[in-house]
Length: 459
Ligand code: DLL
Image 1 (cartoon, rainbow, N blue to C red):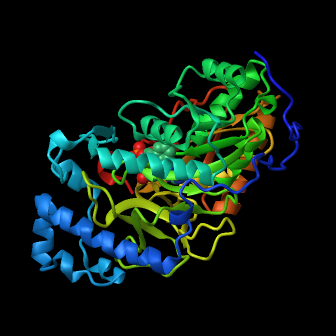
Image 2: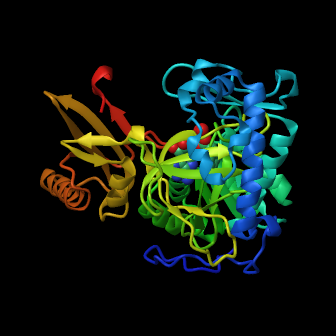
């Protein structure tokens, strides 16, 4: 293995963000990414009507719903009219499994992907050749937006296969004009070796797997901060600012958030720019709304709510007002990077992942934000939810950075965590301290919650 000295601080204690070389501003599709908002809105309206026509003419479920409301594609005269359209939800995909929401015959589908789903049947999604082509451009655009450049060597550790992460990113990397290393997930020692030996500048994986890579490297005595890595694109699961700091520090990269979901396209819906202040959602391809999940009505700008997305260019699987269940906030003020597309603030988690503990609503990522970075703890955790009597109880399993010197020391550590969580998130939890290495490590999407409640009574 060979490594060259990095051009940023390698001190473990430095919290300074590494600076990205290649400072010149670069756009993959400059004119589209910087389109004035009035023009963007005109394009969206035209594309929304075309999408509606596609869905109405080719998908029986959409036609039946629109007919029931007496709405046709021509009734959409202004963008705001989108709120008259019915929502589409995840169970619509399951109920019409496998191809019932496709607007093209199977023979015209170039690619299928599927998301495993924790219950029941998987969700199958499809792409025409044109969809695959658009997808690659959207990802190339996003990678450039976050600091990747043509000519970079990009180590893609998202899983290849039915998951949209691996192959979706793969074609985007090629479209950007970069070199792709199709690593897929797993075999972490090998990942470390390839990062060092081949000299990737950019790493792609989930944030929890990035941490696993960092940990394995440290165990093997390899300092990845000395490697050529400079940028990491992390996504596919919720993560906190604390985890961002941790990953930046341990890998010596600038960590860029990116968001997407299979039902809409996969990765490629929204990417952070180098400002790391919200994710630009590509509005020429997606119409973004944020609604109150209870009432279904739009929330005021900047308020938290459920993200709802309509696709504007998808041929095979047009989606009308898809309820993502993901909670976020919108920012439409102009971004310093010059892109005009609105930004999603960090996606905190799915509203079905929200726990209600003694009346307090809490997302796992809020607890993560408190735990990661606390002294004497490793940045690994699991939340265990149990039903005791009529109440839900939360136990937080944390991992000590080193085996505690005594039982007393362990109790004090647990007490410190309990206190921090109570004062910063407002939740009362038991804390169980595990020894180093005891909690499971992520290979892709981390499992943060072990829900031991009886299925019928879950919050
Ligand atoms: O995770 C697509 C993807 C691959 C995105 C690679 C980014 C990078 P699904 O497996 O369908 O697709 O899971 C989608 O993951 O609804 C969110 O709940 C969650 N998610 C994805 N990205 C983020 C993120 C891919 N950046 C589901 N922050 C979504 C928070 C995220 N949650």
